[in-house]
Image (cartoon, rainbow over all chains, first blue to last red; front, side, top):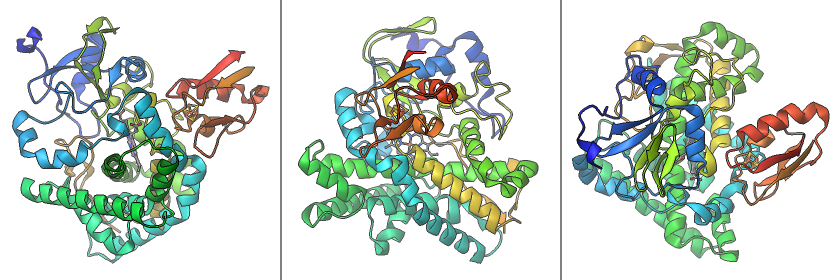
Length: 410
Length: 64
Ligand code: HEM
Ligand code: SF4
């Protein structure tokens, strides 16, 4: 693409002025060119989709592919960073539904949809509650100020995924530590690669063991049993699916917990109202999901044919970044998008994506968020930030937005 | 109102069950299983919302 050498193509990701708001540039671009060309960190040019209706349209279009290994697939890394993190990427690019298209995606997804039905997720509530209670106990017992991220935000989703996958209790601490190292700022690339290898080996062994023995009563055990009856996945793809559930379900939920708690603490009036009536929580959570739309650029795609959309033509094999955050701040769809309005009652945000890849774990995520917020408000009514919200270390450099540490007094 | 739910298109996101539980349910496989294909008047706005929210266009209103 010759336009790649134009100098007026803005770079992606764009900087935020306010940690709680999307980059101001989105608003300007949305008005001018709702499908805009942007330069990715590796120098390739991709299309950035900024309007809600166009985002939904593209994500539901059969002419886009989710093939993350395609050379033009838009990513957040420079070429050097990509080379340096090759080993970590080996973990996250294993074949699973999130990479697949068409019928193959359908088969990989349908063998698991039963595991995520509302009934199944409701049955997990007591276990999630126990996990949340134990995490809060640890936070209360820690020296003050304690880090909400370490004790609650990171711990809860990691332990819930262990529960889901059937990770034996004595191995959960290791699992949690490795998962944390994948995204930690304070470990070297070498250590991160080692953690990634350890997780890879661990999940490989977990699946192999479950394949050998009697079927176990957990998601992986049941997946193996169903897959024996109607083969859909290879052994490698079952391992890839376990890895993907960890990658898709961990940092997303963790960051939503951190941002959501800060949002509640910064809105004391709403917080009091919700504490008095927890039935107000589910709509408040939908609004937090919209407002933060933390998975900013995972819904990326490759055009498999020319696609005319929003006044431009996306050519075959060009990359597309569908910014859920930009779509969810589209003021033609959400009035005053900059207002965090816990009573907005809007569910049509794309924080979980749209189309056939829309988050499979969304109803588990909703339950985790609800139980964490409800329990914190009930058990730690005096919870407060130990530093002003503006001074928290926000994840400006990460693919999933969030906060690195949230020091709190309990 | 008459509706059709297409299990072949459904991806089990459960948006429909969340907004219109009187009309939509999920089967063992987590795929859409309508409780009724002729929703009562009071449920119709929720059905329209479900159609709008469904990520895979798996539910359709054939007759208003
Ligand atoms: C608040 C927390 C979460 C957010 C914001 C979130 C967001 C997303 C988004 C935006 C996608 C679409 C990616 C794309 O279109 O390429 C997605 C896919 C997915 N998510 Fe989540 N997610 C969350 C929690 C979870 C949890 C807890 C799990 C399960 C343990 C999970 C499992 C998945 C899976 C399996 C997919 C791939 C679905 C497919 O390709 O068909 N997510 N998620
Ligand atoms: S909203 Fe659509 S995809 Fe989700 S369960 Fe209902 S019919 Fe299936």
